[in-house]
Length: 375
Image 1 (tube, rainbow, N blue to C red):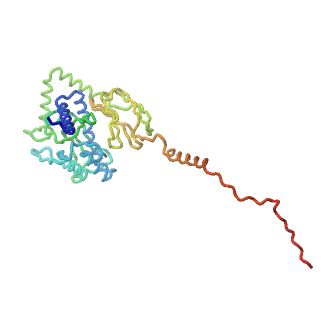
Image 2: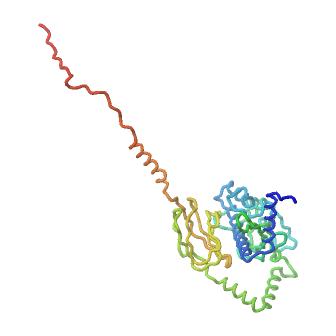
Image 3: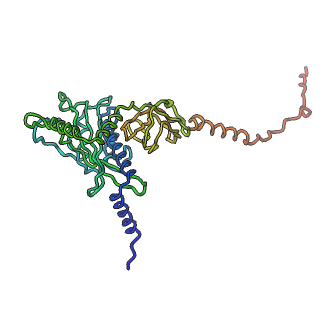
């Protein structure tokens, strides 16, 4: 019997592990997938906002775009599975009230570059993804979840300045894969399209949206007691107070220092994320529960840092005020102290000056009295 090559054995084990995860997803796995799916939708929103920011250079915007679908550049997190992901065009204004509307299917690079060229630049925030809903986890060829959300562009298309965008419902398919090396689930957007059920096409003098509402009313009227209780619980969650920090971060934080953070309501399985400007740097804490947490600042010195706290269960989040991370030792001391030490070392170790020429003794000095001339 032939022995398996070590590389083949590793591939076999990896495939078995993936198959196992695909067949037996635990509650923790599903929660992690949904939490990361939510973060990806938020990052998609942030990406569009960065592309439409007039303070960003063209080079930086191009790097944001490439980073979003490629692992070659780490300026922005990889949001999309690869550069072949298809996004239905919502940049070019469409009349959604017409039947059989033709929607362009664009690859990620084309869509993002079209957005860069067509969507006007604004200093204020104009991109909003709201009312996010996640489906159950699906396992058909690969593991994925569907994210449904409202997309609203409050800016304008540079070629259609008289057109005002309207909020639309979008569906994003998010693909999940288990990363054995990092021991966690990775999730990327694998496609974005219009929610066909919410397109306002005329149907017998009404609209599909109206028919959708009627259908939902019928379903609600026939739910059993348990479903009513679930609806009541969801309503109670919706009426919870907004999440707010009760301790403010100082404007300047020294690296290595412990910062006590607290907020107004207890959270469950929340995520704490570090941002610099609009760019997400990293997740600094996962599965956080309670109303407080001590953070030891290990980030490199810099400006415009911000902490975001997000709770997937209620979809509530809060962001801190921007702050600056300072080095442990001030720059003046880092530069000046070595110079002072070097000067002191030189002063105490410099060689003594050598002896000079011997002075002429006074006793050897001969005084000469000038003689008077003879008359």
